[in-house]
Length: 230
Length: 394
Image (tube, rainbow over all chains, first blue to last red; front, side, top):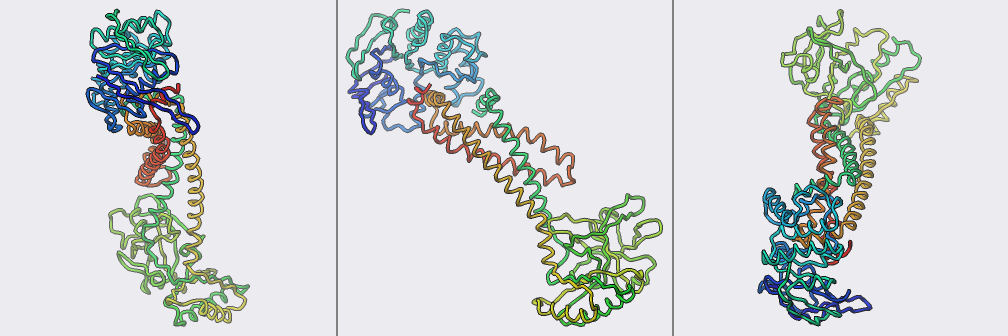
């Protein structure tokens, strides 16, 4: 589904050159739930950004569904992000001036989807994350866990094949973190959504199918885990 | 997307209130200035009805001669002036000549209709030749009018329309008061003598009959049409000659062109001043708008990153910010429109509704243009923000 081939990412300033990723090769299969772990600054988020087509690698290539994206235009990349990928961020990234349902509709705004269809899909996504009663609320009226559930609903509204989650439980307490993790596991197991999750939490990572460890920009371990459990 | 933008601006109405208010005031100021300019331009495009080229005004101020002597002297001067080959036509008049800062008016009525306030001009037969007036209906004055039962008058089309409407005016009598009435013998299409920027007003011409003039009446102006190319040499010669006839009289000569220019300044100067004030205001609004947009974009880095992650192209990000400014402008304009629309509906200042609607349209267009110009660069900057960087800004 997603292939990273010899990915290098180097940040250059006038005086310093920082290697964020070094010769990363990773193949995420359809329906997998992959967790990525490693210490801060090891390149996990950079990897996720490259996978999500939000950043370009310095060298190497990203292949999605067998298609290299290197030569894709801004419009083609935007379309891929919009249709194939859903993002969940640690700090939720909700728009505070929009209601819950309007936030969830956002990815559909960039497609030719009618207003009524947008609303229908947004409400369905909110139902999946158990927030049907909060559709008219604004993000400031929700708890951290609820906000993250809105963010997941937003990622689901576009019916993506892949969800990229960057420390989705990082800002939440253990109870709320477990709730979010349960939602992600259910999505993976029941709907076959491919999920790549960056996490610092070993317990969360152990619930996934596969654990990839990074250190200093390099992939140091890749282990298949036992059947993921809800 | 448009609905989304309206929703976004509406939900942020508190923080956008000042900007919307600024747009509202800018629209109102632009509307006022543009309407004023359009009104003047509209008038400027209308025919004057007179040809003032090569027309001079001679103003007389007699010395202490008795009125009888003064009239005799003026008669001699008239004869002398007419004898100059450079002079094509000459007519006495009061001081309310075209482009002068002087006017005479009176009320006239027809039948049971309400009295119409009209400018009143006393002129001689040659006045038509001095200004090359064209007569649409009827005729100009002639010697036959000296013996007419009622004083003959020529009116302009504006007065004709107000007094008679569609009815024929020629031969009809119009009343000044119970004892004075005039017979209309001619209608001229236009006579716009106040200023080229002024609206045409009702005008009524009466014939000067020197034989029947009151003993204490002296016409203070003489208008002469000179041949093209006649200049100061002739002016000096003429004044010298006239000074020999009218010793100690003050004689001033000026051209109607100079008078036109000086009258036009009365409109130009305030129009230019308003333009400068308006330009300054717009410049300030533009700076404010630019600053607020710049600030907004910096504040909304993570939102820009999020939208890119959710599938927005750089173009869509650019269009969104331009669109938001246009939506804010629309809110400001809607408020302004509510107020501005009262002007044509209530006929404020008696201006035609068409001018107000054009003013509203032009002001709205300018506001939208201003909004787009101010939004383009910040929006372009917003679109250039790298999504991965923007997402880590929060």
